[in-house]
Length: 510
Image (cartoon, rainbow, N blue to C red; front, side):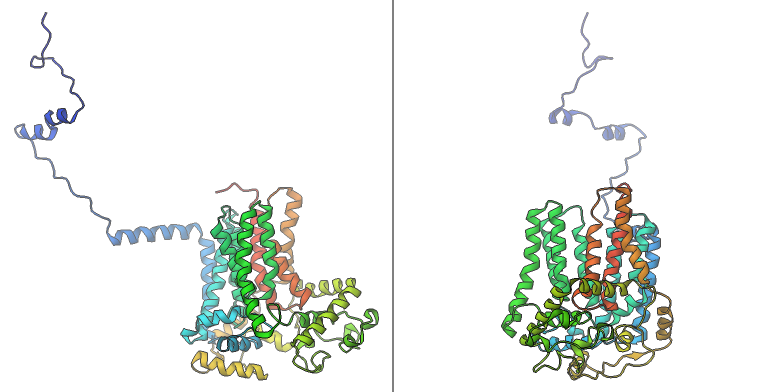
C-alpha cells in the first residue's frame, strides 16, 4: 500500500516552524482575495494618539470621582477657603501685631534679633518682590489649608468622618483664620512642624525623607525657638523605630542650619545662642511665684525682687515690657548680656528654691489653655489683637514699632493701615462669636488617645508623635515664658491628628 503524498487527498504535511516555511505558506488574506467574489480586507489603521481633549476629560473624571469619595472633606475644605477669602476681603491688606514691626525691621536690616529668631523675617523677605502684605496673608491662608490637607492625608486609614472632623478646627476655627491674617510667625511655624510630623509617621523612610524632616525642624526652630525640643522628640521616635542611621541624618539636617544661625548671632553680639532673651523670659515666668524670703538671693540678685505678694503681681509679660519693673529699671537695655545673665540666675535660683511652687505655677498657666470660655488675658490690648476689629486700628505707639511701620510702607509700596471693609468684616466678627474650639474640648482631644491605648492595650505608637509634639507646644511656653492664646493654635491640628491616628488602630490597612 502506497503512502499518501501531499498531493493526494487526505494527505497532511507538518510545516516546520521556520522563517522559510512561513514565507512559503500561503497568506490567509491573500487566499481570501484570490477566491472569486471575496471582499477586500479593510486596511489597517495606524494607532492614533489620544486627543488632548480626551485626556483632559479623563483627568476631570478622576478628579470628580475622588471628590465624591472625599465629599465631606471637600465640602469642609471649600468652606474654609471661603472663610479665608472673606477675611482677605474684609481686612485689607493684613492685621498687625506689635511683633510684626520687629520682623519688618529685620527684613531691611538683616541681623539676628535679640528676642525673636529671623525665620519669619526670611519668609517675608522671600515675598518682598510682590510688595504686598496681602500676598503674605494669602500665602499664610494657603498654609492653613495645606495643614488641613496634610492632617486628612496622614489619617488616611481612619474612618472618613473621623479624619474629616480632625481637620475641622484648622479649617473653621475663627481664631485660627484670624491668626493666619496676622503678620506673626505662628502660622509659618505650624505649617513647618505639621509637615515634619506628617513625614515622620510615614511607613517608608529614606535618607531624603529624614533630611527633609530635619530641615523642616531647623526652619521651625529658626521661626520660633520652641522648635528646639521638637528636634529631640522626633529623633527619639526614629530611635524607637530602630532607625539609628536615619536619626543621625535627621539630627545633622536639623543642627547644621541652626548652628550656622548661632554662628551669625555670635558674630553679631559676641554671645552664644539663637536669641539673647532666654534669661529675661524665664525671669518673667519666675516672678509668678518667686519669694525672696525663701530664696535668700545674694545682693546682686536682690535688686530683681518684687516686694508684692505673687497673687497681686501682674502677668509675666509685664516684667519684660513695663517700665516700672525691677529688670527694666536696670541700666542698659533689657536684653543686654549682663541683664539677661542676671535675670537667668535669678530665675534658676527661684526654681531651685521653690520647685513645687514652680510646678504649680506651670499647671496654673497651662490650665488657661483648657477653659471653656475665653477670658481676657494677659491684658485687653493683647487680647484685642486676636479679635477681628470693628474699626481701623491706630498706628503703633512704641518707638521700635514706629520704625518698623516706616519700613513696612517701603515693603508695601504704600499705606499699610488695615482697612475694615463691610459687610465682609461684620460677617466675620459675627462668625468669630460662635466658631471656635473651646479649650475644654481640646483637653478631651488630648486625653482620648492615651485613654484608648490603656483600654485597648494595643502596641501602636504612631499617634504618640503628633500627640507628644502637641503637648510640648502647650507646656513649654507655660514653663519658660507665659500662656498666650496664639501659642495654643499651632498645637491643635497635631492633637486632632493624634486622635485620628489612634482611632484607626482597629481598622484594616487600605
